[in-house]
Image (cartoon, one colour):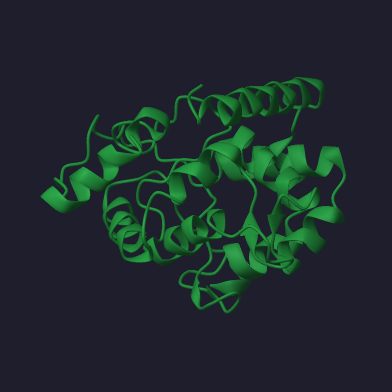
Amino acid sequence: MNKLLTPLLALTVLCAVASSQAQAIKGDAKAGQSKNAMCIGCHGIVGYQASFPEVYKVPMISGQSAPYLSAALHAYKQGERRHPTMRSIAASLTEQDIADLAAYYSASGVATDGALPAKPSSEPSAQVQALLGKANCASCHGANFSQPIDPTYPKIGGQHADYLFVALKAYQTDSNPTVGRAHPIMGAMAKMYTHAELKALAGYIGSVEGELKVVPQSRFR
């Protein structure tokens, strides 16, 4: 049996559950804007850096898909993503809060000046192209890394490279109580690479055009 088959079946079940949750609770972007006080202190400041488990820019979430944001918050809430700050924040949110915040950030700062190119305008080096092909990253995240095949997968094109590197390493971590991410597919994929290779992947994906951005809040301008 293909060693990725069991994780793939598990992921199919997870996606079905996430889809069911999304259908059951409808998010309200306006309500989400009134609930984001705990979010804007990190995600609403351009260039803001986290210091745990290492120094890196916090991810851009404005323009990210609502199903992915919802899935990520549920993963923190359930402990599948182990990050003390994010877990405590997610644990304080109701299902409606999560849906509202996901709706707000998915609509926040969305560009209206045309679609992204089908493929990045900058070609990867031969080394990076081989690394991308090793796990077939485009098959899930899209040829431009901003059109994932499932809405619960993230857009990663143009995301902060240092954040992508930390996130990818987290999928390799299994037994740390405060660091790591449990995900059957991404765990298997990330473990195929060395840290140097993950850094090269993150550097390229972070350099391409993307739809993600930081939308500064008025109080921080």
